[in-house]
Length: 69
Image (cartoon, rainbow, N blue to C red; front, side, top):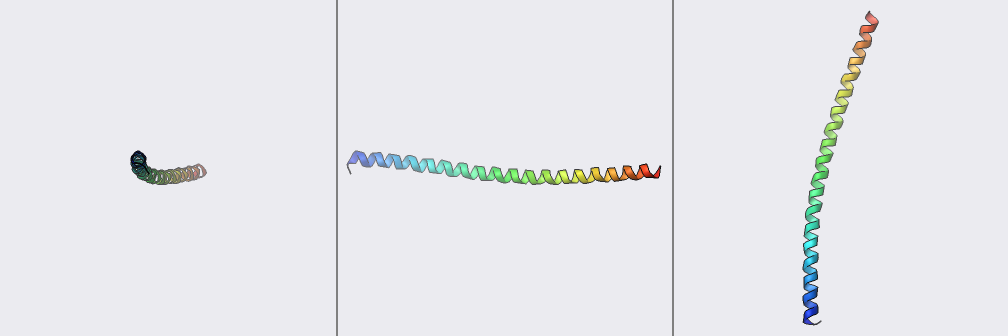
């Protein structure tokens, strides 16, 4: 290979390595964000279940009050 071809190939390889590093960092960031979203989703599901249980308990108490009247 001639000197200009080697230099061109070297620049292209450097650009590919830079792009790889950027994509690697972006991938790590996306994985961290996904983990945070999954944790938040689990928290919201738990809160929803607790709220549903409380509403169901209130309905049971209201029905009991109705029947006792």
